[in-house]
Length: 454
Ligand code: SF4
Image (tube, rainbow, N blue to C red):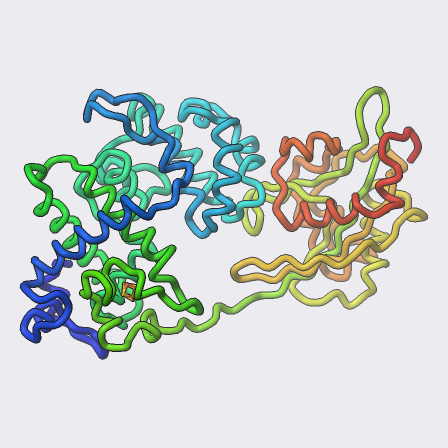
């Protein structure tokens, strides 16, 4: 949708550029002139105020295309995959570890999916990891190991949508490309006084982001149509402004410190008209489903030079936490009708645990975007070698199963040393790690570490 199309549908609280130009508000002049003022102000502000995040300082040597340093496109692709739905502070921690394990796109393409999931474990939204893995393979097979530079070629990669393609193209390769993420959409909606929602709001945000990229190009001396660092600065500036200044509810935007606010360019309609608190409109709270679980952490003492280990089972290849590992668990949507102790006792016995040592450790709550998982954590010592267990063996067929499901893949279970868990050799969800950490922190369970008794 073009900027001209956008002007055709004015909603409550929305004021078009033409409206402002005719009324003399918001920096004065034409819509194009206002866009140039905004683009220039964002670029200047970003250059002075941005955070030195790892993916912004991760430069490789000149690429021969622009004759200067450029960001590592593969690292930027990994960072973008991680940043979807995840806070920057968490990504900083995970990105360094992931890049250390898979330093090149070739290394990631050659890895087993289980290794990739293990390094992703705890970040959530594991589909992102699988798609990133598939994208690495496509880059190696179809692009000679070089991340493609155009929006079109980037969008053809698995898991790469309009935002990520625009981000890599403009920020890494200085292409003339726009991007819209949640931060950008909020900023441009407030700048326009646009309180629309849904697809219409997204389309308008893209039109505004594209107009600002054009304005950045037009205002760059001698750079029209060519690659320019201004596109990168503008796009990162919009995102940074949304993250640091034009912040989402419930926080209050720092309009007085904004490069587009009354103390500087004075081009923001929402600020001028007192609409900041109304944009974006409040969203209806997402429905949160409950999931109830009983987990038994079975500990086997070390022997033969190998340290102590615990029994893990792999979840199925689809569904919640697909392909990740966990201690033996029974789960279901409804609360268990029986006492957790009885369910845990049956699960313990079926997995070769000593029921006499079984004890309740704690209750752990893990909240996801659409789920709230309540887990009763038990621990016991192992008494027998565990044979391969079919998925159905731990489900509702057990007398204490209470109708829940063990939700286990056909490759489970497997003993994994505590050292391997510490080294992230297997992929555990955050909820599974919480349960294991709680069990291992309990004195009587932890007291078995390093002994040959069980
Ligand atoms: S002036 Fe305020 S509402 Fe407008 S863009 Fe800046 S921080 Fe956001």
